[in-house]
Amino acid sequence: MSTHLIKLFTQPERVWTDIRKEEEEKPRNYWPHLIFLGLIPPFALFIGTTQVGWSLAENETVRLTADSALALSAMIYGAILLGTALMGVFIRWMSRTFDARPTLNQCIGFAAYTASPLFVAGLAGLYPSRWLAVAVLLAACAYSTFLLYVGLPTFMRTKTEQGFLFSSSVWGVSVLTLVTVLVSAILYWYFYLPPEYLRGPLGQ
Image 1 (cartoon, rainbow, N blue to C red):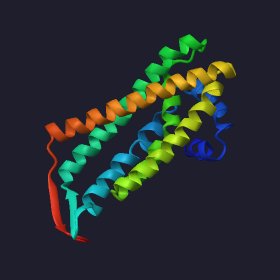
Image 2: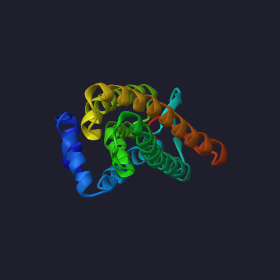
Image 3: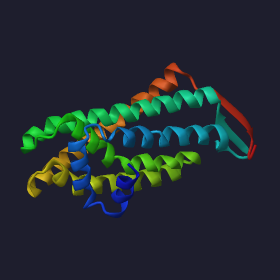
Image 4: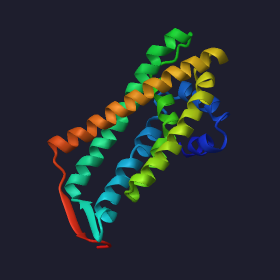
């Protein structure tokens, strides 16, 4: 897992061949990658919202109670796993149009590895800040898009011209899935598990 993660950032054009080979030899080999990396955003968010907090007014810090933060983190983690699985299903469905025949496991694995920058970007949750979150998320989305366009033709073994159209289709569905699943999870948490806040002087 760690080797592939490093290579996704250092050798993005070469690593996909190794990932596909491993997926063929060991189905569901992506599970450790997804399960453990997927924990980064909810874990960082829990620490950031309970220990660091954020400021909405001068000289005041707002934090979540441990129970509220735990519920939010659990919802985010569930959304990550569900969103990745759904993306795998959509990729598998779309692959038939582009003469590719990957298994569902391979499609979920591809989605998990492509989303790696987004998982790592979850570290920004350690310091709750709207502008930091936006900047890091945009950078992570840009790199995930790069991995998608570079990796899909190799991983799915499609022709270059088909790979571009396939990648574009996956990108569009990915954005829709990401927004729908995450927003749904947050809204459920907000309306059905009302957040509890702790307010205090800045720095305390």
